[in-house]
Amino acid sequence: MSEEMLSKLLSNEAGGKPTVGQLLAVAAGVGVVTALGYGAYRFLKYRAEHTPPTEWRRVGEVSDLWIYPIKSCGAVRVRQFQCSDIGPQVGLLRDRIFMVVKSADGAFITGRSHPTLVLVQPTFDAAYERMTLSAPGMMDITVPVSSLLSTTSPGDFSVWDQPVAAIDCGEEVARWLSRFLLSEDFGLRLVYYPLDQPTRPVREKNRIHAMLTARDSGALHDATSYMLLSEASVADVNTRLEKPVPALQYRANILVKGPAAFEEDNWNWIRIGEHTIYRNVKPCTRCLFTNVDPETGVSSPDQEPLSTLRKYRLKPGLGASPVVGMQMGIRTLGSIGLGDAVYVG
Image (cartoon, rainbow, N blue to C red; front, side, top):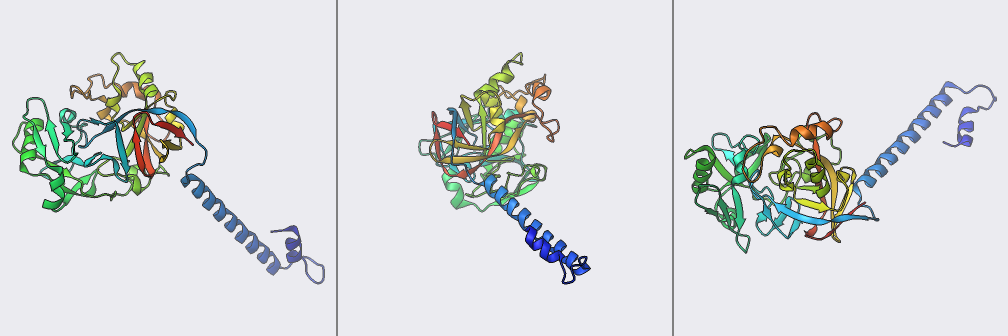
């Protein structure tokens, strides 16, 4: 409100003191202007936070790519992948598109409670339509992924107590998993997420992260559909450990070489190659699964590297869960490959 307008509102014909009505009018005017100004500020701030930048700075390049078709099971290393709304994919090889559940209630299990899950190694045929599972002491078994969508209706299962529709993959693979993981003929089943879009809301514990939205929840992921880690961050942790751990133990999708250790903590926007853009939506907090050796399926008796990480990688508001890497939401779809340049904005 201008000085001239304020003067007029506070003056009266007799030139005396302003009336109560004039004072109320001024107060109302100031309130309206303040509300409009704050609303404009909030709008501009929101738009700035959700609009990719126009200027980028190169920080490194992609050095490794992994897709984990079954939640908590072995990784498939690839040279490139498409970036979809629910995560990395190459044909029907998609990230966290399968999960192992309990027969009794449909609740998922992970490597936290069943570390030998990491020894279940998926591979795909050349057309990325059939998945073969291998595990120590077991005959290989094949899951015809391409036929699942046309033969079965989705059932009700859950991820972190959130309902999710998924397709049961049948008795044969259910028995195979139960025998390997439980030494029983029953108890576990394999299910498949059949949709092309996320369906779960942000988990309550993750709502403190303002940039994280339901569109980032992926297929059967814990929090987001993409995770990035730098080689230098892995190396920094390893300098503090008696027994170094491989980058694969952190179960990232994208490994980057070039940036300094933990530099990725502070990136807001990430572009890989010419067109694929991500938003840093959440620090990647670490749990007991980080202690599981991907080659042996054994959890470290010394609780490493988690114990060491808790000494120097805790962040305010995140409790006792240390941070290594960042979780991203896809904002511009594209494809990425080994050697692609990584930019931040």
